[in-house]
Image (cartoon, rainbow, N blue to C red; front, top):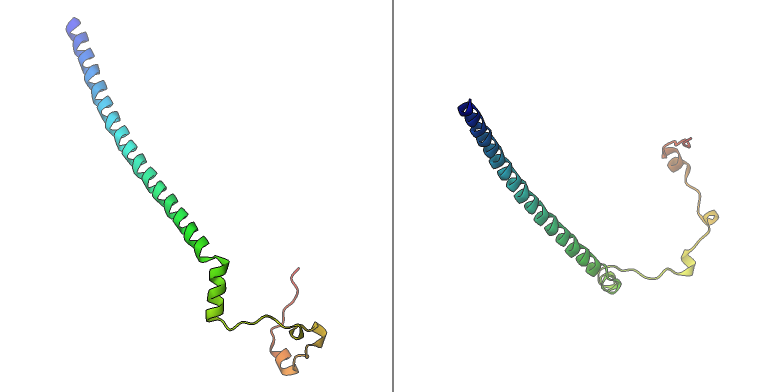
Length: 106
């Protein structure tokens, strides 16, 4: 009777040890996966901070003003350029006929 009990206990200890061994390595794998994901997340956050800093640098008003002056031929709007809608000429009839019919949406 004691040999059967001893064999049962030894078998139970061996199964427990094997299970503990598998759990230990599964936890280690999860920890390394977590560390890799944490590093990737940190890198992505750093990249976002760099992109935000670059965006702020590129959108400085004085820099944009220099680019506009160099590349665009813009001038301030004159008061004579502002007209009332009633002063606009009417559309020619052939152009008005070519416009698509749009019905108001409910």
